[in-house]
Amino acid sequence: MYKYINIWISYDKVADRMNRLAAQGYEYDKEYIVAVRMKKTSETNDKQYKFIYDKNFTPETEEYYKASGWTLRKFKFYNMFRLAEGNSNSYPIFTDTETEFEIARYRLLRFIIQFIIISIICVLFFANKYTIIKWVVMSWIPNGVFVALAGLLGGILGYCLGGVIMFIPKYCKLKKELKLNSD
Image 1 (tube, rainbow, N blue to C red):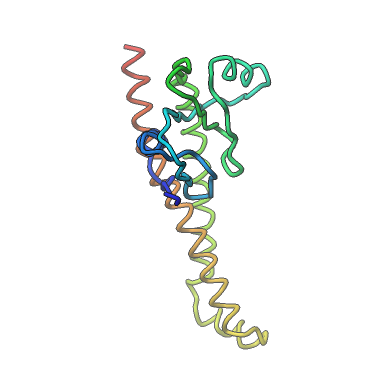
Image 2: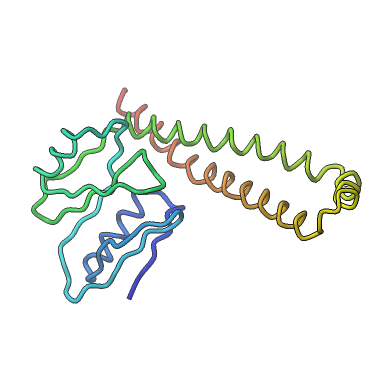
């Protein structure tokens, strides 16, 4: 049996949910673009999960985490962090807030730029519908291709908007933490 955890919430909440499921006998199985899959095992375990934010994962860094009792798992789609899997005997992990803030800022900026670019493309694509319809008819392109292209643009726009919505609270939270730490 599998349980899926949506990644569109903050990564701290994802790790908390993973830890609660681990206490019920689930363990990390696989990640997808929008979710983490947990697999049911036969017995309960004391596994713990934590996301580690670091710009430069070197072999020395991975050796440090291995020596501390953590197994690092790299996600295929997200290269700014790793999922650390440990147990109750693993040494506690402390994430550098400044590095996490820089990563959140970078990702938020990337999603905002992507959102602006795809919004411009969508406005140009949908603004003058009569010209587009003439182009579809004159070029003998079936109507289904036009609908598929419109759906693709809408999906990309939704992905970019979802990224912006997801990283704004994380960015604001980390900015507040850094301000409190500097005072």
